Image (cartoon, rainbow, N blue to C red; front, top):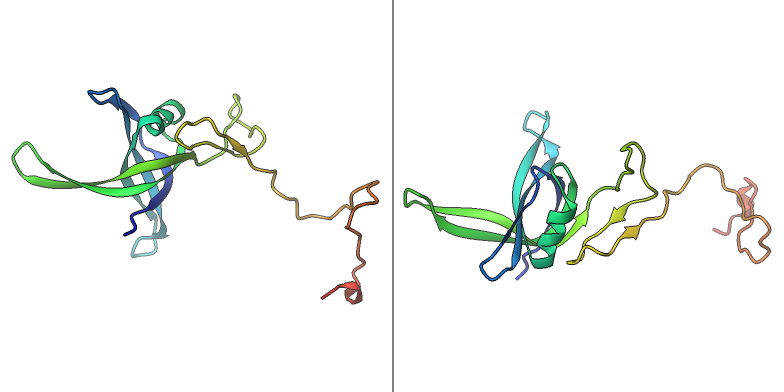
Length: 165
């Protein structure tokens, strides 16, 4: 059987970190996820509010590095919980149990205006790994590497006869 879910959205509030009686960390948070399509009348897109829970180091990571409004990517499994409300009625709740959590947007510099040199993605269960993506390629004009005779690249004229295909 397969039960895997990946969602990306913004936190609706700061994550709430608690500890079990045995000291295990658990963070609860809600992610607002926009649907890919508009309403029936083709109007504004609707938003789903998805409850998530992260245990142990993943929960501590979420609590430490994410705040209300942060873009977050959550990978995990869907869990349905049965519970009884105050009036004795039987209820069901769905939530995502996070296995991995990642930053969903670039980290901004302290002035809040510019990016600090690439996307920073964290995650794994310890929050220590970061990955800086290479800068976006420029699709303007191409300049051959200067002074590198070992380069396999050479400028081609706009003559289609020189193309190898």
